[in-house]
Image (cartoon, rainbow, N blue to C red):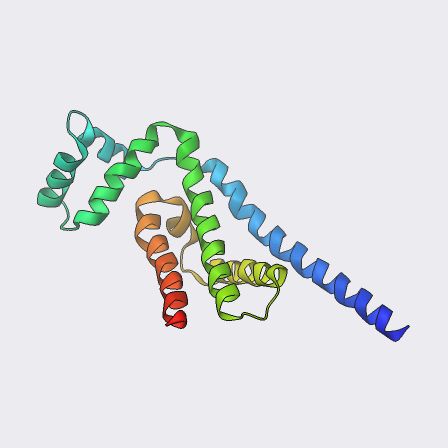
Length: 166
């Protein structure tokens, strides 16, 4: 009887923890409904009119910034600014990539851990990451900054997993 009650309490505690983690992520998903393009996005679109992406990238590189890759990707991402629904999917995609990268790191390095626990740990690490980043708005919802900071962090997590495999 002791084992049955212990099993029941562990299931209840797991359910409460999973519910708390999911409830912690829901407000960030709801905020995706209110994402709108910023001034930079409209400025990039304005410079893209009448030019191809490579000409606009050269224009921005020569006159504003010396970062080819960031400007190039920003020009590509600003093409989606005219459709607000696609623009709002970008933060959701970033959140999904964060959880996937944490999941691959945890599930790949801790090989004895079950799939469900690895998924719960990856969601927990994502909530902890959201708690610790300096500004959630620029990291997820401002497209240019989210490209620079978020994709670099996601790539670093994948790099950690690859280095663990070596």
